[in-house]
Image (tube, rainbow, N blue to C red; front, side, top):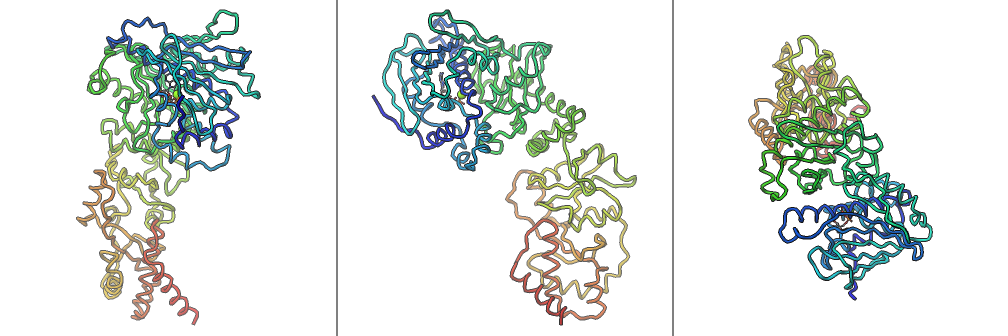
Length: 605
Ligand code: ADP
Ligand code: MG
C-alpha cells in the first residue's frame, strides 16, 4: 500500500466543495457520468484508429449500481481506464492552469464562492459532497494490472494493486448518512434524466437482484432535429458539456447539408468562464466525427475572440485517425470553422435586433472579447462592427453604430470617438461637440485604445479620435488674435517643458481653461498609434500638446494686466486638471497641492 499526499490545491478545493456547495449536490453524478463518458470516448476512438486496440470487443456503457446494504453508489464504465501513474496525476492533482490564482481569488463567502466554483468546473472531487469515502478501481485498456485509489478527503489518499476483469473504472462512493437519497432509484433516475439523457452512451441502473435497466436516451442531442429538443434539454445538455451550473444565455444549433456536411451546437454562457482572460484558457468546443469524439482541447476550432463559446462540432467528412497537426491544415475543418464563425456572428447580430436585453447581457459579459476580433479578423470586420455597442456623450444607454450614424448631423464629417480610462463624460474635449450638438462615442475599455484607431470606416463614415488635432479640420477656424497670447504661451511652455510638447491657443473649449491633445502631424504620435495597432502595447506615449482656452478669464485677465507673477502655479494647476478630466492621474501631487495653496492664499488676501 502506498500513501500519497494531495497537492495543496486539491485539499483546498475539497474543503471548499464539502463546505460551500451544498445547494447543488446532485451535480456530482453529472460530473462522474461525464468522466465515464470521456473515458468511453477515448477508448472508442482508439478502437477505430489504433491497431493495438482494434481487437478489443467494445460495447461502451455506463452502469450505476445501488448497494443498499453497504450504502454504496458505484459508477462504472468500460472505457480507457487508468494505471497507478494516471491515478496520481488525475485524482491527486489539478491539471487545470490558473487553479492556484482561482483559489486565491475566492472570498470566503460561501454563496459567492459556490457560484465561482461552478464556473471553474468541479469535476471528480465533487463526489466528496455526498461521500465521506471514495474508492476508484481501474484497469487501463491493454494493461494486465488493475489499481485501487482510496481516500476520505483530508490531505491523503492511497494507491494499491487490485483486481478488475475488463478495462475500465468503478467509482465507489460511500454515501454520507444525510445524503442517502442518492441510494434511491428514483433520485438517480431523476438526476440522470436531467443532465445525462443525451450523452451518446447507454446508462444502466442496477439494483440488487434485478436486471440492469437503461435509464437514458443515449442519443447525441446535437444529432436530433430542433423540433425534437425542448428548451430544458438544450439547457441541461449545456450544463453537462460546459460543467456550468447556470443556464446558457443563448444557443445556435445548425445542420449543414451541402458540399460539406456537419452539425454544430454552440452555446453562449451566461457568466464568464473563469479563465476567459488567461492566455492558457481552455477551449470549450468538442470535435466529433460522425458521433465519435475526437478532441476537446483544440483552440483552433474557433477564432480566439470566440473563446467563450461552448459546444460541439460534429463533422461527417473528416478522417478519424489524423493527428492534430494535420487536422489544423484540413480544408474541411477550416471551412467549417469559417462558416461557424460567420454563423455565430450573424446569430449575435440577429439577437441584438430581436432581444435587446439579452444582447446587452451578452455585451457586458463578452463585448471586450468580441472587440479583439476587429483586430484579428479582417474578413468579418463588417459583421463585427455591427455587433459593437457604445455609450456616448448623449446616451448613458448603449447604442450601436447604425443608430449613431442615423443620428449624425447632416454635415457631420465622421464618427467621433474619445478613448480614455474613466469618466470620459467630463472630458473638456467634449465641449465643442456639445456646443455643436454632435454625438461622441465614449470608449473606456482598456482594449479600445488599440481597437478604435484600427476601425477606419463604418458605412463609408470615417472614425475620428477627438483627442487628435485631426478633428480641427472639421470645424471652422477661430478668429482669435494669437499674437496677444504669445508671451503667456511661452511662459507656460517654459514651465511645463518636461510634460508637454507645445502650448497653443484653441477654439476647442467653451468652459474649461485647458485641454491635452495629440498633434496628428506629430511623427512620434503616428508611430505610437501604429505600434499599438500592431499589438505593441508597451510603446511609450508621446508628449501631448497643451491647448488653452483664450476666452477663459484666467488667461484673459493675465494678458490684460500683463501680470505673470502666478503663471507657474496656474500652469501646474491647469495642466493637472486637464489630465484629471481626461482620465489620467495628477503628475506631481506635491507640486499640484502647493500651487493650489499659493493661489488660494492669494485669493483670500
Ligand atoms: P476533467 O474531467 O475536467 O479533466 P475531473 O476532475 O472530472 O476533471 O477528472 C480528472 C481526470 O481524471 C480526468 O481528466 C480523467 O483523466 C481522469 N478520470 C476521471 N474519471 C475517469 C474515468 N471514469 N475513467 C478514466 N479516467 C477518469
Ligand atoms: Mg470531468
